Image 1: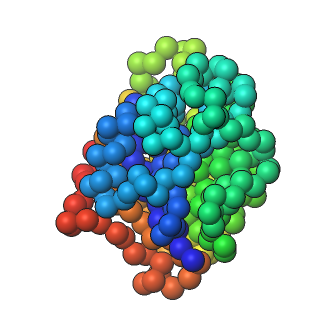
Image 2 (image 1 turned 90 degrees about the horizontal axis):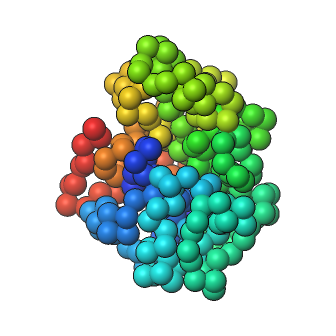
Amino acid sequence: MSLFITSLNSGSNGNCYYIGNEHDAVLVDAGISCRETEKRMARLGLSMTKVRAIFVSHEHSDHISGIPVLAKKYQLPVYVTLPTLQNGGLHLDAHLVIHFAAFQAIAIGELEITAFPKLHDASNPHSFIIKCRDVNVGVFTDIGVVCDQLIRHFSQCHAAFLEANYDDDMLDNGNYPYHLKRRIRGGYGHLSNKQALGLFMTHKPAYMSHLLLSHLSKNNNDPALVRELFDNCAGETTIVIASRFEETAVYHISACINKNIALQEHQVNHYQPTLF
């Protein structure tokens, strides 16, 4: 069994990640509009009819702004913790709201979604592992620090969306006020390039076929810098820079270690979005 993954958008202007097999899919966060979500999925040949649910990582607007319209239009259940629902001001039909708890696996078709807590300045933030039989995909963004839980789950992933939010020097020398710089790197903010690279180099499993570097800062990072940093130590892992403007390609993730099989990309009409 395989999983198909794509970043529909990744950044402070909106985050939305698609993970699914041939029959069922879920979205982790929906911080772009319903219309944009539909357009980007259509360009990739993905169907909203396969999407069974939306999982919410936390209540910041760049992760939830598209959820009310998307959930109502397609009658999608929204898996969200009660504190996140209350603090995010999400107005959803009651029958579409399902609360989840950390470490309790949720079955959606052959998909199994498990949340675990993360360190971020939100009310009840979580990361997610999406599993389909023996294939694991992680969604690890908006994380203040690399903790033991993150290490344990990352080291079991065949593919992952991993935050690489800022470059230390760019943040230090940029024009953000001191309190915002402190918030970003204060342990409940975001992962730096250096922190993400350290996790990757130290805990990447040999079978990880794809790493989608996500939530890059517009002002405090440089996609070319991130790519150079990770390409130099990627080995057999394909490095993808998730864009804040467009969707990535769809990547086929399997448990097969043979790279020629594991690295299949599915695109429609040879559409190849430019990253930045």
